Length: 290
Image 1: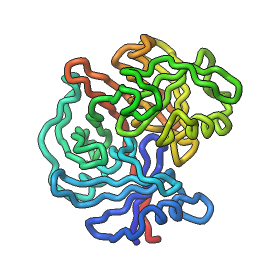
Image 2: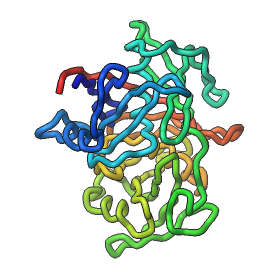
Image 3: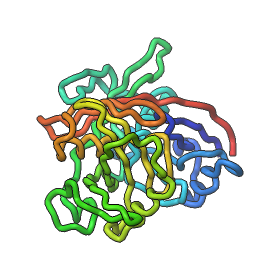
Image 4: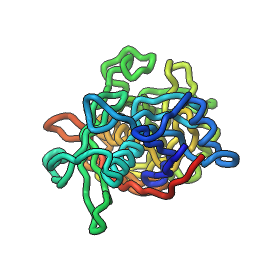
């Protein structure tokens, strides 16, 4: 099987071009290729497939083999691969919430529906940055899902390891619990507290956990424990959820720069259409045969 290793600000996946390859039993394949000692090494597996309703279809599997509806960093890499390898012709311009325009666009079918992406083309003719319309956040508790019957789950107390934490929950196609911290998130024992939140009884489908320090009204720093993958250098849907949670709780404005261990993402929760726009890089590392 031919594959390509790519990452979006350090959130790395193994990508398979299913226009040319067949991916049998992708859940088990994700477990095998993701192992950083005996496999290729990644946060999971992403399949780039033909679509009847969009330019391409994306299927994303975590390192433990579980399938997720969406991956914000992964979908940017899907767009880059699709354009750079000429899997389909790109469309026309794309407006990012009325704030920025991109010269090319693609539509990608995901578990959360069809998403539109704007492509910034570098001097080498390849994609350098991608902006994704991540759609509208899901805020109702039972729809996220979290076992709290509320229209919004904002600053809700949760007990973790004998500590009372305040969390805000948002879904961007997958569930996120956002915990804002008064101190730096760098020294947090994420490998201990992350699994406790992921598997807490409040979350029937488990959850992605994010710890966030607000640096200013338009700037924040975050660390992530991803459902099914553990500590990752970045989480695109999580960064979008954090931006929404910051607005809902009155901690930041609608335009923010999120600093993640792997790099930065520009985020805009647009008031006009209620959609979250995420802009960041996508990098092709190498290709091979497994």
